[in-house]
Amino acid sequence: MSGTLLEVRDLSVVFDGFRAIDGVDFTVEQGELRFLIGPNGAGKTTLIDVITGLTRPASGSVRFEGWDLVGRKEHEIVRMGVGRTFQTSVVFEQLTVVENLDLAASFRRPLWSLARRRRGVSAAVEAAMATTGLDALAARPAGVLSHGQRQWLEIGMLIAQRPRLLLLDEPVAGMSGEERSRTGELLVEIAKDHTVIVIEHDMDFLRRYASQVTVLHEGKVLVEGSVDQVRSDPRVQEVYLGRAEDRDKRPAGGGRAGAAGEGRTGSAGAEPAEGAAVGSAAGEVT
Ligand SMILES: Nc1ncnc2c1ncn2[C@@H]1O[C@H](COP(=O)(O)OP(=O)(O)OP(=O)(O)O)[C@@H](O)[C@H]1O
Image: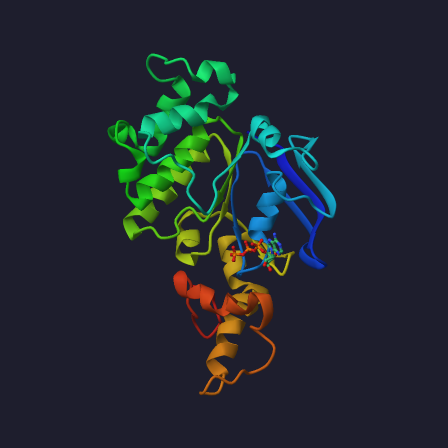
């Protein structure tokens, strides 16, 4: 696989006068596993919302395989081959794992045919179960799955729809260490025959599984490059660590040490705690 799959140009999104995305250019090549990071409020989810047709931009273009996506309905974009997970779960708890996968895979079938009971499972469902390792849980109701298994089911439901581009919003949030490792390996596996964009905050996870990283900050692309390039970039350290340092310098008793860390990205300083920490004297994002 080679060539450009997704091309976002000069994109801006405005909510009541506030520019949540401000002139973003973002290109993803076929077969990439791209990580999208940035402090709270950086615009990561909004960017994905625009790509998937949930939010309309004020200006700019989004091209997928050369087709402009702006102005298209969400279901149309799904049919074109763009699938996404949400931060909140979308599985049907009463249905079994295989039924959830089958339902997801049937989105191209006409409505009347969904009522007909079919024998066996489709190749797409088989493949999704094999990739996510959910075969052994096929007959279990989704409601009894662990948090990690449920996330894998959601990823499996996406794969069953045979998208060419998958957008995953914080897939390892709330997972145990072992579940994170399995998810990282799953993403690498999926990226062998799909293009994948992952929003993730956990620096440790990034270090292990990311190759190309895009850092968003205040609606703009701050830095793009390899994990090492991004981690050692002073601008990234300023965004992730400068705020933590400002917070540490605040006088006891709740006083504030200036504007940094205030406003809509005010919680950004707390974010590295999940996976990143203040590093060496060089200020490395670790
Ligand atoms: N529908 C909306 N109406 C108004 N403001 C919004 C809306 N959606 C997002 N925003 C604002 O746009 C900014 C970017 O939000 P977004 O959710 O894209 O950030 P994010 O990088 O995904 O952050 P997080 O890591 O916290 O999920 C934030 O300031 C947010 O409050």
